[in-house]
Length: 69
Image 1 (tube, helix red, strand yellow):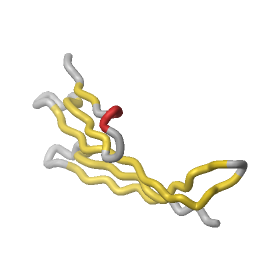
Image 2: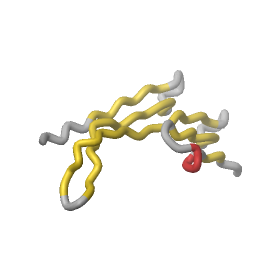
Image 3: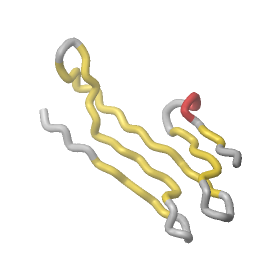
């Protein structure tokens, strides 16, 4: 089984990553790949000064983040 990983990035007008997604991973279980493919990614937002404001995970909200400075 080949492991073909793909990364997709989109940028906002300030050339900051607005969204990313990595796909093509295969889960490892019982000493081998079980063939179940999965992906991960997030949508990002930024403060006016360029610092990260939020990161919302596509798959699991427990990984969502809000950054306060």
